[in-house]
Length: 334
Image 1 (spheres, rainbow, N blue to C red):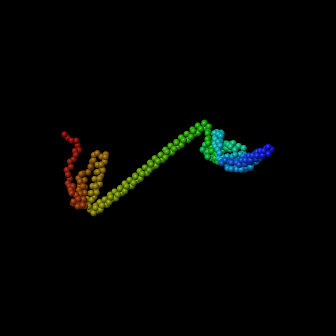
Image 2 (cartoon, rainbow, N blue to C red):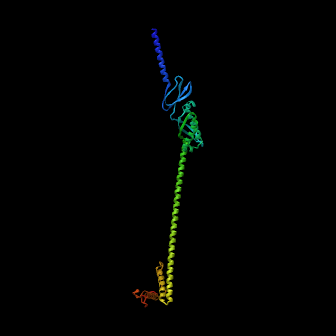
Image 3 (cartoon, helix red, strand yellow):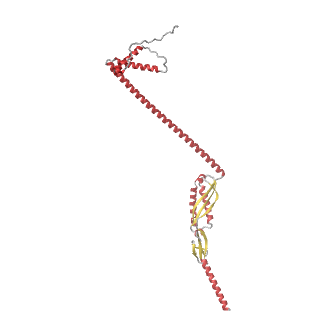
C-alpha cells in the first residue's frame, strides 16, 4: 500500500508538471490579428511591440499591455459655435481621419487618444475659422481644411499618430443671417441683370451708330462718285461744244456761212425744246418770224447735202414761205 501510494503521488506530480508545462507554453505563444499591434510589458514596463502574426513571449514575466489598432480610423468632430472675424456666429462640425504608426507612443504618450484628437481639432477649428470673415468661411473650405490639417498633424505627431484628412461637414449660419444673405444674393443678381441689360443697350446703340456711320459714309461716297461722273460728263460736253465751235469757226473762216446758220439753228431749237418742256409753261409766244426758222432749217439741209451727198436727205424742205393763218387778235364778230 505504501508503494502504491508513493506511485500515485509521483504520477499526480508528473501530470501536474505536464499541465504546467503545457500552460506555460500556451501562455508564451501570442497570435496578433492583422491590423493590430500589441505592446509587451515586463513587470509593468514597456519592452517591445508584437506585430501581426505568431509571436513568443516569456511566460509569467511578460504580459500584453495595449492592443493598438493600426488601421486608419475616423472620428466625428462635434458641432460647436464659432465666431467669425466679422462677429458672425456659425455652427460648425467635421470629421477627422487618422492612423497610428507607433503603437508604443500611442499607448504611453497620451491617455485617451481619441478624446485628445477631438479636443485638439475643435480648438484649432475655432482658431482657424475665427480669423476669417463669414464669406471666406463659406467659400474657402479647402483652405480651412488644409490649415487645420497642418496644425493638428504637427500637434499629434509626438503621439505616434498621423492625421491624414480633416473635413468640414457643415457650416450653418443663424436663420436671420441666412435670410439676409438671401436678400443680398437677390440684390446682387438683380444688379448683375441690370448691368447686363445696360451693357446690351450700350452695344446696341454702338452698333446702330456704326451702321448709320457706314451708311452715311457710303452715301457720301456715292454722291462723290456721282459728282465726279457729272463733272466728267460736263467736261466732255464742254469739250464737244468747244470742238463744235472750233469747227464752225473754221467753216466761217473758209467762207461757209451755212455752217454758222446750222450752229445757230441748233442752239435755237434746243432753247425752244427747253421752253416747251417746262412744266409751268402753258402759252408759248414766239417773238420772231417763222420764216427765219424755216430758213435756218433749209440751211441745215444744204449743209447735210454738202457733207453726206445728195442721197443723205430724201426730201429737202422748201424755202418758200408757206401761208400761215394768223390767229385773230380781237373778239369775233357775229
